[in-house]
Image 1 (spheres, helix red, strand yellow):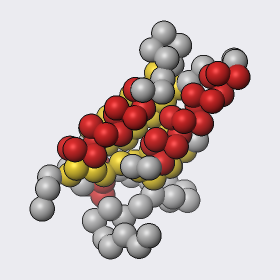
Image 2 (cartoon, rainbow, N blue to C red):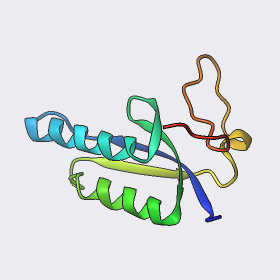
Image 3 (cartoon, rainbow, N blue to C red):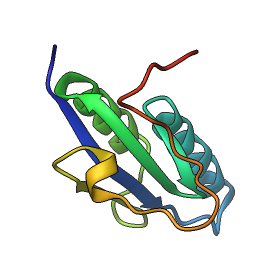
Length: 100
């Protein structure tokens, strides 16, 4: 089985223009394709290295580096070992079966 990367991906896209609003939607769609939204612009992602590279390329093709920010935090171990959720949990159990 391929090694999985567990990351938190988040972004801040300048939406002061119509172009920025379009970029925001495209960046959100790119992140949704690879992870689970846990807050408006924050995603938990568990992917292979190849899928991580695809996600990164897809996002970086959308953002404007002079106006927007995309951050990735590598968690190292499994989500359950490094993430604590208080209140309503909206995450995905990446270690359990995923039903699409």
